[in-house]
Length: 183
Image (cartoon, rainbow, N blue to C red; front, side, top):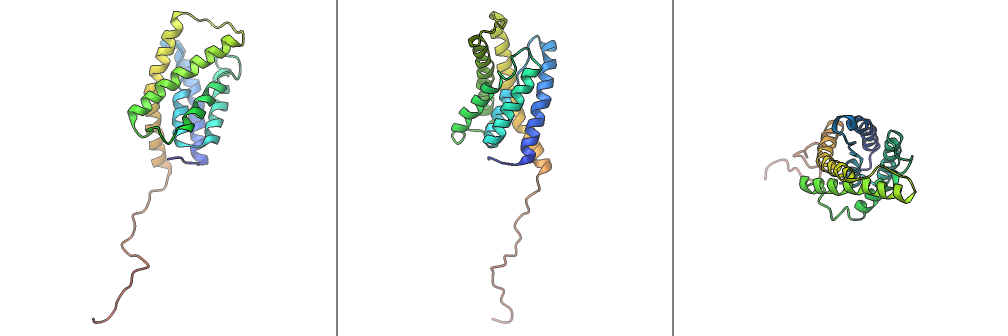
């Protein structure tokens, strides 16, 4: 199911760009900022190659950090780690099943903010943490789990829109023999 297509890469990066702006505005509505980039990373890892995953980690992480209070570049490494770990066992993951997509989205949406928080604490930054942090991570996990199968459906619909329809095989085969005359 791995497709290396420049249009697919462009659409994934465009979606990441839009998702970053939507999630920066969602913080005012829900009281917590949703992080849908790990869910998009799950989709990109299971359907594209390493160059697209690396581009998504770099661009998405920098776009997210530029609109949040995170130090610039700190979100790149957790996103890249999610992509790398999933790509190691991509052939064993059940990427076509919605429940598996949901679970992978949950795990990735837990790993990314937790790793970012640990990196900030290790770097000597003092982020605001407390019991509310775990509530925010739980909301991000649930949103990421729900968003992952939706990304698969969204990009599946885009693929049907932009790809050529396969022709059915004709009944005439050029290698068959045609007998003419009486037998």
